[in-house]
Amino acid sequence: METVLMDNLWVIIGTFLVLFMQGGFILLEAGSTRMKNAGHIAGKTVFTISIGALVFWAVGWGFIYGEGNWFIGMSDFFYGDTSFSEDGLSPAVDFMFQMVFALIALTIAFGGFAERAKLSAYVIFAVLFSALIYPVVAHWIWGGGWLADHGKQDFAGSTVVHLTGAMAALAATIILKPRIGKYNKDGSSNELAGHNQVFTALGVLILWVGWFGFNGASTFGVADAFFGFVILNTQLAAAAGAIAAMLIAWAMTGKADVPTTLNGALAGLVAITASCGFVEPWAAVIIGIIGGLIVFFSMKFFDRARIDDPIFALSVHGTVGVWGTISNGLFATPELSVGADWGQPGLFYGGGFEQLGVQIMGVVASGIYAFVVAFVILKVMDKVMGGLRVSEEEEIVGLDMSEHGGYGYPENIPAPNRNEQTGA
Image 1 (cartoon, rainbow, N blue to C red):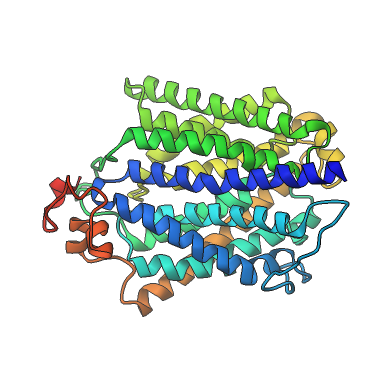
Image 2: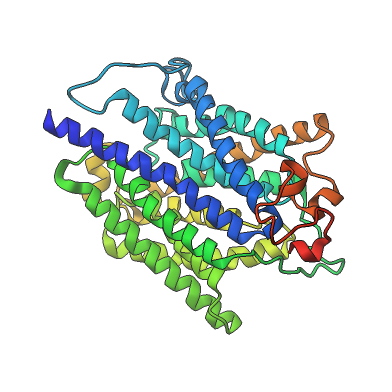
């Protein structure tokens, strides 16, 4: 009984850490964007995760874990299990832990909306993403769906959470189009620098610490203190990603760019999320290094493709989420993957291409589903709502004023009709 209570305590602590990651996202996104939108970013994060929580309670859990078929669950809606098991997690603890993961995916998706979407677009998409996109992918991999049947390994969500959110962000970014002033007619881009690198760095650090709950509590217990091993891998990958990203930026541009370094740390965290319980520490370092390198080149690629991604969600969570998932098929060790009774060792441990193939299949299927459904939803919303994007005048003034009636920094931007330069 004591062990069961400790398991529940550990997972609920992990739940608190994952929920507090939203504070990290607020600082990261606000710091990475312009002052005139800071209050909007903070406020929309709080109310959209509130919407997501209610939708997850109503249908999200049921679509993921309810009895159903290979595609989706179809029971346990409006979750209300009040039982307590003496042999495992309290259903309420398990429910809360799964809920905060869904909210992280939602916040990642909204990275593609930054600095140009109407508040109403956030509200409607929060409902639809939380009901129709995230739960389906989560059911396929974690809820007993068809990818779970094939042995898809995703320890804490490189695909389920990060790639799913990023593909929805990609759909939004394409439909909303770039921010005013981001690209010139000749195709060159302008830097619309975030207003506070200190906020961004603190946000990354909060996310880093929160990731110990994200990955560590995904052990769902304290037996053998295996969560410590998972956290070790998480730490090593994050550190390796930060260093790799800083060094490649320094080598390629002559400057040790701070935002790139911060995104490198996040890239290491995203990359190891699928494999933190399946690989040895040396592999975690390699996975983090490659994640840090990928994020640098991915950021450059999307910018050249004129895809305006202010938060770098597509690179940090998308391309690196793909790498993190595939890396499992390379580095998963038999002692950990086979012991889980649901996967196979990776290519470098004699497992051949079986697990690698499953991982690639999972990335392709999940990514396509999330992108296509998000694109269709947003396209319909765009038509019905007369546009997802605020007017040019509202964008120039800033979403703080145009959507909420007051600036997050009112003493620094006193006049609501200030031009683009004063809002940068």
